Image (cartoon, rainbow, N blue to C red; front, side):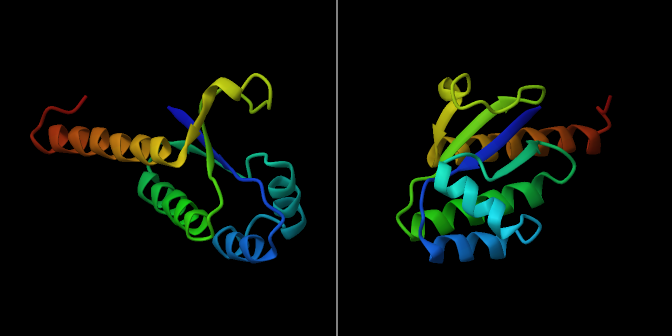
Length: 122
């Protein structure tokens, strides 16, 4: 299982407002702090049972950043790893790679679902 994170660096209030609408559980001040520092502002385990919800959220965030010409920075970490700006630098990915990770995880999950339907479950 992976832990996916998204970061972006900006001080634009329109981006802050748009992301806060997508992430209402994240306090505005915390979101502003992450965006100003360029540190991850969203983190989710993936894939899990809520993979569709996570994929949808990440795709909305990536689309919002892209629509505002803000570079999305993704990180694909092991579940047990914590983000660190120095040690996580080699895990840095662009938005296209994060989208590919989401897509591939969905394909794998669908393959497992198909196997279970055919009676080949664990």
